[in-house]
Length: 290
Image (cartoon, rainbow, N blue to C red):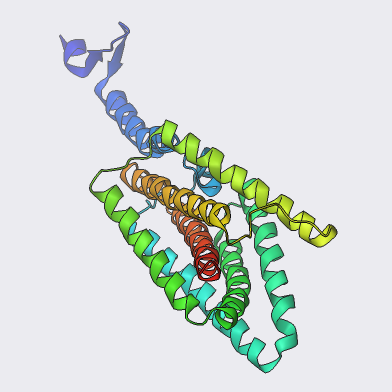
């Protein structure tokens, strides 16, 4: 009788004390809290976002107990866009003072963002804050002088491209929020394939520009085919936003680590600036076609 009161029978047919049972349950509770991120990561990774920085490999390193939040991600997005804006304004101001530096700054920003982006995607640093901020600064160093060049050639184009980009981002966010489009695995694979193909075409075109007298046909033309290509690329960039929103949403709901807010903000910034760049090109082509 004393054994029945002081001990309990386990599910495997063994007697154990109440004290050990309570201690084991406490340990299991702690373990489940520590391992709670595993299922969350598997669910988050199932989205297979089209943006390279949202691929599953970026969710492998799990540290700390703080969770990803919408508010924290929005703060990181604001920080990165603030850095990019300051860098862009500073480079444009320096370009007015010393016009000879405008083109070198643009090249530094372009190749710097390419190099930093590739490093971030493949090295996956445990603490990405400094690298992501450096990327935002380099992005501004590229987009600022580029915008100035477009503005000189097509007055008012910077405001037009900025408003168009804002309108597309707001539209995509609304479409995602009401559930019209969801980033299913098939949707993401298609968009990722298209985005990767576009990136490859751009890299080949850069290679041709610097090393040969040729460029890819129709990519820069202002005819119907050239305009159609730009419209298609804008659509692909817009669809990438749906995937990005879905990944951030899943990360927050599933309790992804706090550091993933920086990856989320980084991915959104890459897509939005790419969209702005394509808007500049599209509007310029439309003006030339008149």
